[in-house]
Structures are given as C-alpha cells and as structure tokens.
Image (cartoon, rainbow, N blue to C red; front, side, top):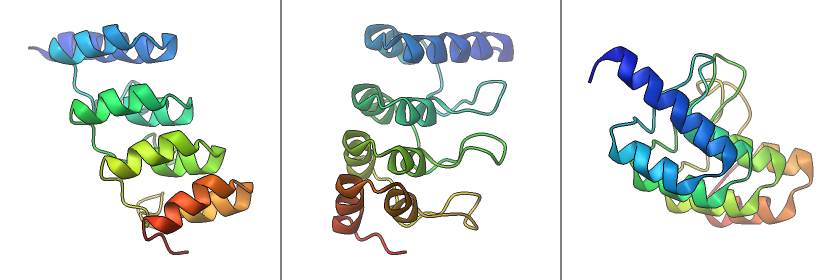
Length: 138
C-alpha cells in the first residue's frame, strides 16, 4: 500500500470515528488502516475517540493495535488517557486502562500533567477513582 492510499484510509477512519460508525472503523482497519496513524493535524484516532467519549470506538481501536500511550497532536493534545481524564470520560478511562494505558504517563512527552492531575482539576471523581485504583500518582 502506498503513502497516498494510507493517507486516504486515515482520513476515512477519522471521519468514521466522528460519525460513530463502528462497522466502518472495523472494516477500515481490516483493509489496512493504521490505528496509530495521525491525520494532517497530528491527531491520532485513539485520541479522537477518547476526547469524544466513544468507549466502544476506543475498544475497537485498541483491539486493532492502537497504542494507548501514544501522544497526539503537535504539542497541543496529549495522550488518550489525559484527554479522557480531563473531560471525566470514566468509561473511556476504564477502556484505556484495560488496554494498557499507563496511568502515570504525563502528557507533553513527560513534562505536562498526569491523567490523575487532569481528573482532580476537573473534579471528575469517578475518573480519579479509576486512575488511583490503577496505581496513578500525582
């Protein structure tokens, strides 16, 4: 598969995530879409699903091999777990932790906030409890 084809699959994957079209997401990764490939803005599919509070999509992407610890964006997004924790998306936090997300991985390549710090700042008690149960520290 050439670069152009991979880019098209990534665009289609991101659009399918935004539409919450999980059958299309599954079909695209079976067709060769890379679940870790970022779009032209640097956003990864797993980050987008976490930010948009799509736990089923998060599960599908993790099953497809998406890296739960991969940073998204170009210094302005962070990890899927920090996004989910910041917005209090407890079901997504649960899926990411089950999929191997590091509860202590700070965003901004280790120099930013941790998922737990984001959950505490936002007053997201369920996400905070999930993170602590997984061994998160400030």
